[in-house]
Length: 277
Image (cartoon, rainbow, N blue to C red):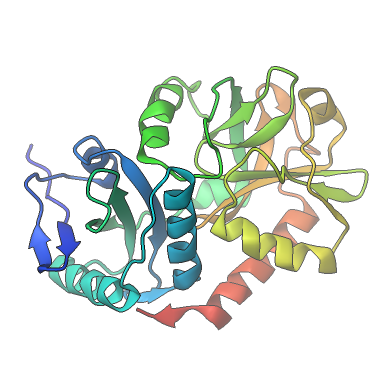
């Protein structure tokens, strides 16, 4: 069966042009894109976005970390994304903006239909598994990382929603495509170093101090049996409860009250701060 193609385009000084390849998803498109840096986000209510300029700021920072100096035309990117959204007709979209290392004055834009977190995961919580994979230059969002993590993602145990990166010393850093948090002894822990600063993480860390103390230090594998709650966050998913890591049950194997409160506050923040492209 032939699956529908998603819009993929090149944005340069010449304007918006089609790519030389076709793709059926963002995951498919990344196998055809050149090496570089990227950012990924979602739209709300068709053409509304959250922290758009922050995404571009991080794209510029990722570029600097790999030796590139870019100044993307933000107005042109917004217009190009609106064009692709109109072309696709998706109710809501997930999009990626990539900067090729070889041609940094050119952007690659791709969009696909937004797939929300399954209701069962939101209601009952997610199961995660630890993976030992080293993320080079973790503060840079590189296309090489998308390729590197694919093997880990493909080999997660059945029923696993997300893989969690663990260091040889046992520190739980972040998810393969998310940030990870745990409530231990009344404090919210999340890694502050050695991880990619997430857009959703930025929102969570602005909201959490109103509920409990925050420590930018990761928990360890040995801490798992003592934590009360855990969750992950990402720009595409918001706050997602975690109720098991490997075989260790978290709390009472139900989303915790702090997690649910933060999810509600995150969603309210998104409603109040989203803007039209």
